[in-house]
Image 1 (cartoon, one colour):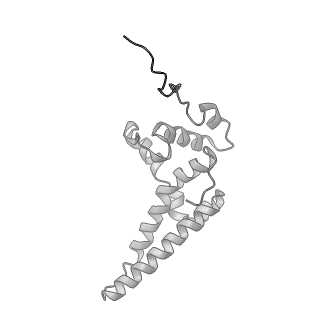
Image 2 (cartoon, rainbow, N blue to C red):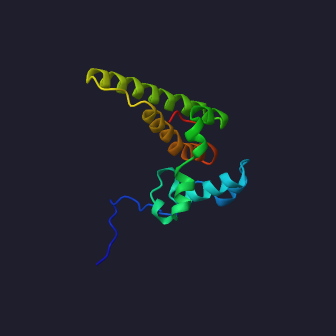
Image 3 (cartoon, one colour):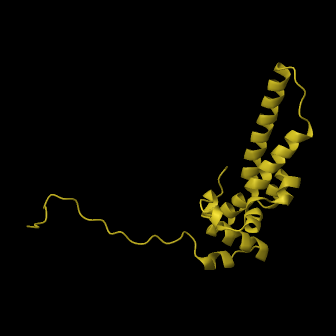
Length: 145
């Protein structure tokens, strides 16, 4: 016999969870069409975590994961896009890493890698730029990281 348990907790109503932003929200953003395309691709890839990045083609992945202007200009690019908090954070991380690398290499009596470390930090700016701008414009996140 199926008699309900009077001491059981109430059943929760499970509804479909909607996406945090509708497609129309990206279309209404005050950014260029190329940025809107990147934002749609980032959303299709699973948001800032990009858990479904494999669903994108190679050219779409490159468009979403690497920003050549951010590679060349780093913190200045972030400042131009209005992401000064993230610019300060990433710049601090880069300075701390350069100092730590310099101390480590001098303790080991090795030469500093020179331009290679600058390119590595440029790559850090380049791979974070699109995701950080997506967080700022679409998710309205003004965080430090």
